[in-house]
Image 1 (cartoon, helix red, strand yellow):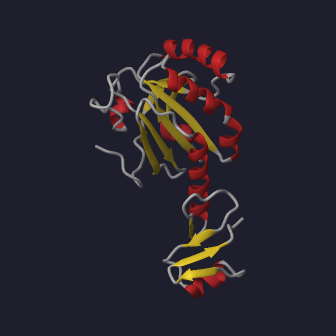
Image 2 (tube, one colour; image 1 turned 90 degrees about the horizontal axis):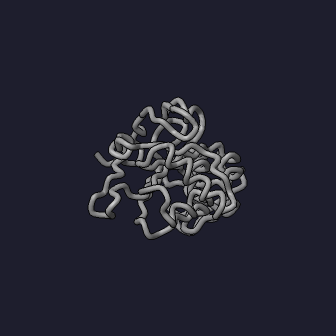
Length: 210
């Protein structure tokens, strides 16, 4: 079954490059990013894992844990890690699941037989501390993922989880946000005493809450 936004992320136990994890326990009170790649020793994914490793401080700042997944065994992941460090300049600093039996791939509907010859596609799941799926993305094997965009979306998700706001197109950290329509003007006065700009009754812009 497809994973839909708001679903509880399927729990699982898996062997990784950092030992065995029980997924929900591993997430704990953090946010999590689960991402898959079709196969070890593939060019685009080599750049991706190196990029993610270089962004560890950014994910840490946001209380986000990262875990990768491939259908290859741990020993293969470990050999590949040396190539990633050599070519990308960043050593792996997050676990990578060895999903040889494709148990996790099946749980998260990562098997797309018509997409490529290695079957597992390059999926991304952002999961909140409540263990619910907040974002899903699926990329073809030929297109490298944009992790700056992933961080931008996580910023939006974390902001909107705490405040009654949404973020407009191309929003970046620090820019104005939208008061959600379910908040009346009376309630908005309490939540946003500094006021807002009303472009339309349903489009009210307010400085980003801190």
